[in-house]
Length: 274
Ligand code: NAD
Ligand code: ZN
Picture 1 (cartoon, rainbow, N blue to C red):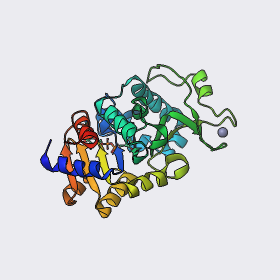
Picture 2: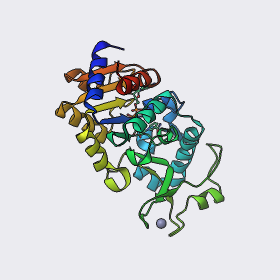
Picture 3: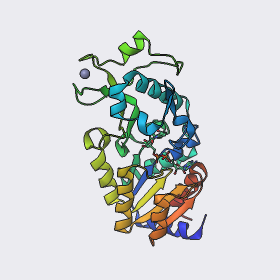
């Protein structure tokens, strides 16, 4: 590991500092879940190709709920078949070792952090969770477990049974995926916005993994860390806005590389020293 990176991590370890991790689609890429920049996110409706930024919207759901649901059922199926990797496991080990000094803010809806052993109360899903649904008309607060639809042909229309399973048991409207859409806003109730910001405001180290910084709250968390001058490490094979922040910060380091190779060694130094 690079000398400067070791020094930064060693300092956090000696101080008994708080660590906030911020993860994006990149940490799950090696579990076989495509990032939004991969071509698998695309979807064809009629003869038109849609990108995730068009599919993952409330506007699209209002216009074509069955299409949007088919896309999510396909993506949820990919998540359900994936297994956590060494990156998820390294962060879960950090969570267990640091206890209340650790918090995970994830943009991923795939559930792999929890399946790797992350503590639910210390995990903020700021973009929602594939395992949950809620009433599209918000006739009740909170969420329900995602109905078990099983393996389905992605191109097949929804069956009557599937439509029934995806209907609100209280008011009969559509249930919706419990995910934050591109034309919606962060909040505390569903997406733990304040909790995530608090975790960033009290951290001694922000560890960013596999995110391109395309959305607002993660960028805000990065800026907050940069402004506070805390230790800042970014794990990503490619340049991105967080790697630029790391290069700007005196206590920052851009750990270029894949999550599965970088995170286990990083966590080892944070827990055991050099
Ligand atoms: P993104 O798709 O915009 O960017 C992914 C980032 O991961 C890129 O910077 C890429 O260089 C990096 N990356 C690729 N392989 C990596 C690896 N092996 N190790 C470390 N980094 C790697 O992802 P984003 O910033 O999370 O934003 C996309 C949005 O899409 C988010 O809102 C997220 O909720 C959603 N999304 C979630 C999933 C999931 O749940 N797994 C998958 C796709 C998209
Ligand atoms: Zn309802």
